[in-house]
Image (tube, rainbow over all chains, first blue to last red; front, side):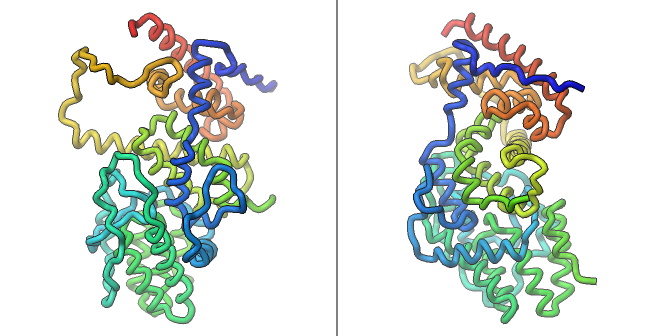
Length: 236
Length: 170
């Protein structure tokens, strides 16, 4: 079968619709939007290359090493994972007094009801969880243009998970504690799935198989279709 | 296959266009950064699985489409719960109305708003984002011929909307 040739694009036509579509083409994300987005994603993006076009580098070097480590470390732990609901997943227990969306400004509202029954088994049960240290940015107006969140908040999430990841082999109890601490501080964080993977693996390492399985099952319900789920199945 | 690029590289090369695409796919300006963040989190998680069956750009736009669609569906559900009665346009003008010139974002959104989601997606990817029709079909996940049909229908609707807009008083 002969393949059809793509028609001329309307934006190439002069005037009329063409003008509107050319205007649409020019309406790319602004430098300010890219900067804010880069700051939100900081722990995942890692450092920019020298002299990147368009996107300013992270504002501080403090903790940058931790960011690098957590990105590569979590990538190793959860490589291949996939899910679509991460950014909206919201564990319901326990309520975090200073809940802060990871590096992002607060969202307008939970976009969909949290998976209550699925999330419930994921409650933090370990004693001695450190009190939340999150900055108080949760009360900002949801629809207003947001300024870049404080850098320490971004590093805090990355730092917690890096501590959890690095403690996994030598001290899984500490890994679990850090993961649960992350859960309390960042119930709607961007790295929710990564945290759960660490926590479940730590529980298994501690021999708390029943808890690990329950948490893995809750994960599967909260994030159906996630490739992480496959990695969380217990070894035969 | 070469190893996929880093998230940082993808972000630097595509973030501004991701925002543009989301905007024209109907994501409000208040939400566009949230949704773009979701896009790149998903990219981060799925990047190790990228097999190169499609171009990176097509793959990225497919993620944009899915994320935007999920967001719209959730936003619709929220609105359904909280909206009591839509505001009524009384026809009064304050002089502070948004710019609706042909080149304005509001006008473009108005035009695109004439299309259903399937047609709007094709128009955004082909006419604004500059994908080839084969890439469009891959990103959308439909047969190429279907993509052509939708583009054809969408263009007719856009043309009609355009003509109507030119007859309406400013």
